[in-house]
Image 1 (spheres, helix red, strand yellow):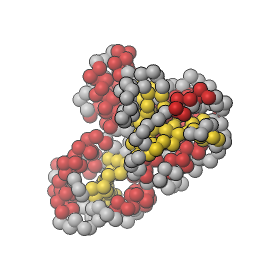
Image 2 (cartoon, one colour; image 1 turned 60 degrees about the vertical axis):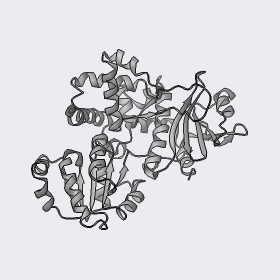
Image 3 (cartoon, rainbow, N blue to C red; image 1 turned 90 degrees about the vertical axis):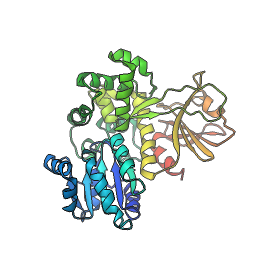
Image 4 (cartoon, rainbow, N blue to C red; image 1 turned 60 degrees about the horizontal axis):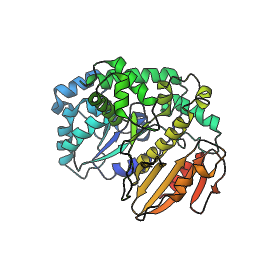
Length: 393
């Protein structure tokens, strides 16, 4: 299979030169193992997806570590947290032998908890999300229909570039995710109900999340809904965009907006049969916004960018879809899946002020030219958004 370089590779190489342990997290099937095995063929490779290796490591972690040849890639380390103290001891024998251990893990929350206890100060932590549009070499002047073809397939490597049927992939992905990850957690007893919960969240993508409403529709308690949402967020299935508070004197909405980190999984949960029906369906605008917000998240993760991501909405329902806040500057983006831009589309964006920040304002639309809409607001075609993110640094 053709290898597609990943944007995070330079940061990964830098980390390997500076830390004895490097941890690469991210959702299942995002390409972690492929990236590492392609770029570090001289490393020994051990995966704890192998039940026999996992059993040996759990039962006698000390003996297992004695038989490891360094440098080594330990894949799916979250299955054997018993190894982490022994990795710490191996590292502490020579703290300046960098890049000896590369660990990967999919269950982000559990992994982070164990790492913070065992390898604090010894490990660099990076995250790999599914492909960006640029990594797929598909970012220049795409038509909207082509974008929705891509969004329908999703950005996981198998359906995105390896020609695996998207519907088969996501059906298997959901089953694997639930059976291998979620079933291990005591808070999920009814798999069918959990899948219904995910479907209800998908129907609310790119919207402010009313979790009580979702819990009621699903027939579960709000506490259960909160626990399940935390599972989905910590394993990077969903992303919660928090509201901006800042120093503004207006009463702001406090609930997050919900997005799925992969549009292919989102459209599968929404049960769209084709990209064509998706493009012309009622969720098209939400999927379009979901795609752009997650592109920003992927850029932040890949570049280790310092900006924080928010949305803005006040009690008068004035809203800005995305705020990127870094030091004394803030980049504001309003997203409209439309060709014909009118003043109403950017009126609030134009009038938005913040005395503490230097503001840069953009409308992202389907109109295919960069254009000044006012003295403060500039239209950019959606396919130039990744390039605009790079311009931030």
